[in-house]
Length: 344
Image (cartoon, rainbow, N blue to C red; front, side, top):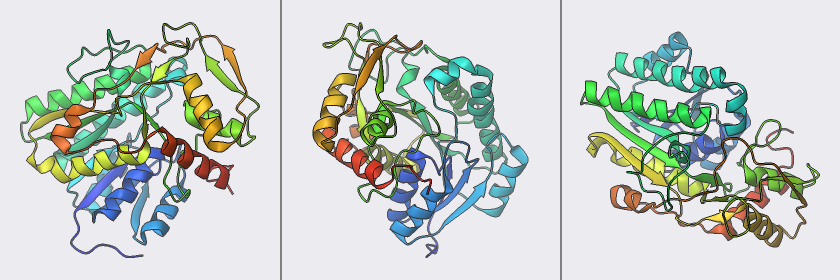
């Protein structure tokens, strides 16, 4: 395993997670040196081992929670970072309504702790993993970056609060260079089938749930609500391939030195698909049956949500390249090769 000599070093918080591991892989391929901190509460160290194998490059890993200021500071003492990509946090909309204090502690307090440690070490470049949930229930679609923000659940509020904290920090100190990336719905897996989404317990996102039903792990898919004002009554979302999403982070890191203040970007494809569209497409792509049951709406869910991602094209020279067929093909390859995820 090689460490890249004189390469710029990037700290990736939550780097062992789904989007984090794919971004680590692309950062390594782009010539960066990567250091990961992760508490492994909803991720697996196996993901990073596989990234190292795929890239033949070394990742320095620390089992650290971002709320632990002392442990985080020790990482910064060990390394001189060029920038931080901040993924670490809890991410389930439904769960956030049940344990809101845990979400505020981990996502908001954890982010404040990270920003404090960065400031203490005079590091002022950060790419933050935000979410389309900050738009609340949008008045119209597609969604542009200047739409009003609000939140319909505690998870979304934590993302919104951290965005505001970072904006306030940039006002207080104009040397900060901050990129807020608002994700729509990440799906898919690396083309190797070696890394992908491995939710702990019952999946909160649609695609891993569908793929677990298809592989025989679960009996049926629960479709939450079929009475929305959408073509087939089920929720419509903008699904983006995780590799496209990760590519945007690499481009943000490559260009962050030329940015000033706060740059906010939507990351999506600009296309909306309903839950039942995704079920049908997955059945066609995998050749497997995906039985489903219609159940009540989840609190905090909205009818439709898709992006206008054109600004990210202007600022980063980025666009989503992978279509729905690839998203499903790569998800199915990952799930069928790893029916138990990263567990042996």
